[in-house]
Length: 128
Image 1 (cartoon, rainbow, N blue to C red):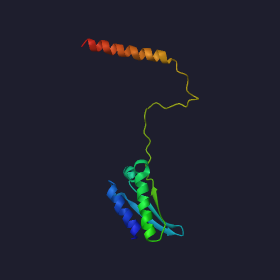
Image 2 (cartoon, rainbow, N blue to C red):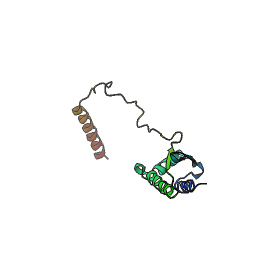
Image 3 (tube, rainbow, N blue to C red):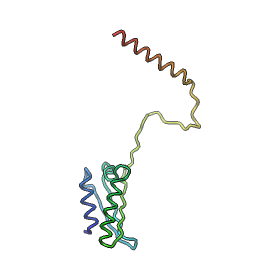
Image 4 (cartoon, rainbow, N blue to C red):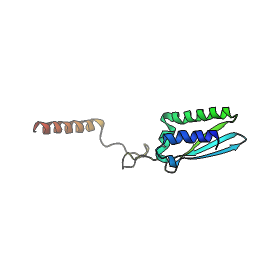
């Protein structure tokens, strides 16, 4: 096993919750060394880090190891199946702005309704 692959495996398995799901492939061609890594979808955030900082740091360390061995080392992180999960904010489908009908209520009317409901709540609290 090459030094760069062993190093990456050690670092990544220490970071993730599912170390058995870490898969690392190493290929060498005329462009240099390409290390392809796949992790469990639940661990992607730990590998990427905030704003990609963890992934950048791992790539930098791999390049340092590559320089030591006179090789250019690149890391590709594969996105696992189901890696990008979209969050549903509401069950009501959103409409595009061009298709949306203008609201029947003005902001003043909505404000009055909100104020009325606040007043009702205050009255209810006074009764307790």
